[in-house]
Amino acid sequence: MEVFGESLGLEAARQARDAEADGFDGIVAVDHFFSARPGAEPRWRVEPLIALGAAAAVTSRIKLAAMVLNVNFHHPAVIAHAIASLHELSGGRAELGLGCGWYAPEHAAFGLPWQESRARSDRLLEAAAICRAMLEHRGAVSHHGAHFDVENTVEWQWPARPPVPVVIGAASPALLSRAARVANRIDLLHASVGGKPVVDEAHSRSAERVERLLEAARTSAMAAGNPIKVSATITAALVAPGDRRGARERLAPELSSTPTLLERDLLYVVGSDDDLLESIRSLAGLGVDRVHVIPAGPEPSRAAPAVRAMLNAIQAM
Image 1 (cartoon, rainbow, N blue to C red):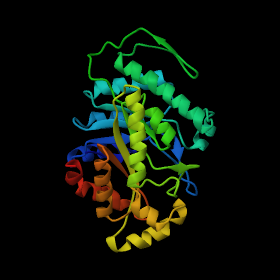
Image 2 (image 1 turned 90 degrees about the horizontal axis):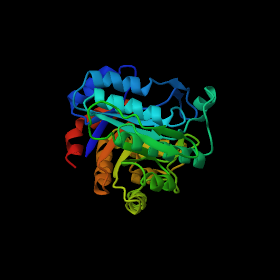
Image 3 (image 1 turned 45 degrees about the vertical axis):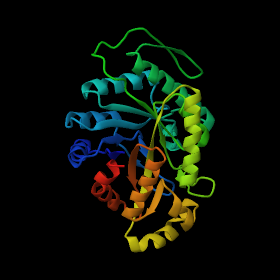
Image 4 (image 1 turned 90 degrees about the vertical axis):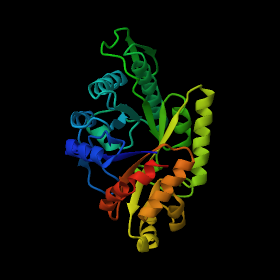
């Protein structure tokens, strides 16, 4: 099991050095101008490729993952060229994650396209096909689709390396299955409605539901002749062991959930360090080979040290 460290911010170089020294397998950079969960104040984010470049300059081992670049912000040919450049300059450590966006206000603020969910998903999958073609054929691509037209025969001149893997992060069953046909890896996310995390009966991520989602995705990938790997992004609201039940009772209303659903959810962990480890162990048993843990309230500062403390145990799964 691979474990990726915290998302990069304005101290990207220091964060990357620390992550490598601590033994993490990779770090990630998210793609937002600004964002906020409902009810919170928006805050600006560092540009992801700049942050990953800073991380590449001070590390030598860890993977550098854009998780995920928003295809409404960037043309896929530009994304592929940028990530291939990072791959070359970092000695073959880049990874490209793609997504279709979830935060409408930042799109509106800069006049960028924001469509209904199906249209955004279509745009994402078309962009992923272009990126994968370019990354596997040294920049050469011929694509004429509903959203993009790209015709390039000029190949990249730098030395050949193993292609950059393309990852699609998704939560809905339909998008997971569609993504499995075109990506090298799918990253399983918890569900959100209107930008808000939801752990209700219809959207919870119990072991049984995760198993069904991944089985459907793997079946779709097999039908397309496309081998895939599976990772998962976990949101962790970690508390002292004695406060698990109280924390679940407090957080359940804002997640449209119940304490029982939160106790069983693998991707929105409200509990102790041991609960997080057990969730990761369950995901490993379902064929997930990588996790990225995102801190959440009520005590977000607990998550990073907890993951660091259990790093060897997770990697041994």
